[in-house]
Amino acid sequence: MDPLYLLIPFAYLLGSISAAIIICKLMGLPDPRTLGSNNPGATNVLRIGGKKAAALTLLGDFLKGLIPVLVAQLLGADSELLAAVGFAAFLGHLYPLFFGFRGGKGVATAFGVILALSWMVALVAIGIWLLIAKVFKISSLAALIAATMTPAAGWYLGMAESQIYMLVVLTLMLIWRHRSNIQKLMRGSEGQIGSD
Image 1 (cartoon, rainbow, N blue to C red):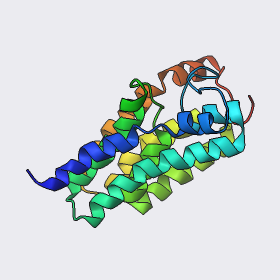
Image 2 (image 1 turned 30 degrees about the horizontal axis):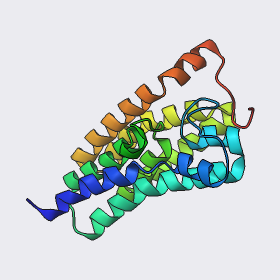
Image 3 (image 1 turned 180 degrees about the vertical axis):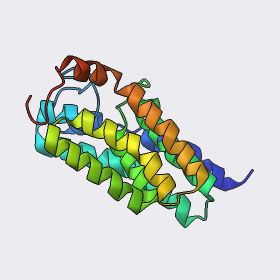
C-alpha cells in the first residue's frame, strides 16, 4: 500500500479535534454541546463565549481542513487522494473520534478543505457567504447557499472531477447537518448573526 494513503486516517484524526470544545474548556466556558444550539461550532461559541472564543474556534476548525490537504499536496498526492484527504478531515469534524462522534456542522472545516484545493473556488464561496450574510444576517442561510454553489464553481473553474464529486457529497452532508436550521428558516425563527 502506498504510504500516502495514511494521510486519510491522519486527516480524520485531525478533523476529530474539536476546536469549540477545547477552546471553551481552556477559556472556562460551558461545553458548547450543552448550551445554545448544542452545536460545537463557531456560531454557537459566539453565543456562549463571545467574539474571541468564536474567532479561535473558527480558526481551529478552518485549519484542520486546510492543513491535511496542504500536507498531502506537498507530499505529491494525486487529485483523488487530495479529495479523500479533504473529505476525511471534514468527516472527522462531523463525527469526531475523540468526542463521542458528536461534532459540528462542518462549514469552517469545509472551507479550509476548499481553500487548499482551489483558492479561486474558496474565493467564490466566501464571496457568496459574505453577500448572503450581509443581506440576511443569517449564518446558516449564508453557509447553505455558499455550499450549494461550490460544486458548480469547482466545475466552472476546472477542478478535478474527483474533487467536484467530493464537493457534491460534502454539500449534501452540510445540508443534512443543517436540517434543524432549515426548519427554523422555513418557520422564520432562525436567529440572526450576533442577535443572541
